[in-house]
Amino acid sequence: MTGLGYTLPAVVAVLAVLALELAVLRTGLFGKVEYWISMAIVVAFQVLVDGWLTKLSAPIVIYNEQHSTGVRFPWDIPVEDFLFGWAMVTAVLLLWERQRPRPNNEVGDQ
Image (cartoon, rainbow, N blue to C red):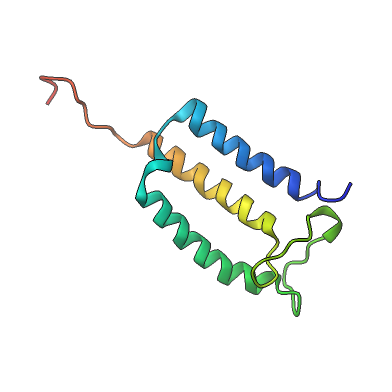
């Protein structure tokens, strides 16, 4: 079954994190500029490191192409890596955001 080994779990991870935020945690993280800036920084470093690790000319990490889409961009990075990376980083940020103390808006509670 081509693509299921890496691709299916990557897509499931993304969907699970989206469901966690939209149905359970509801932190509002996706609406914050800080989140998107953080994700841009993460992706920039992921491209540098993952590109070096997975370059087809001298790979350090080797993927079985039968278990992925075979789409690699940029610098030979399997697109599944970006899905897994997004899910992992976003899940951590969502849990971090959820546990942060919130200001109490009730009158007289200061």
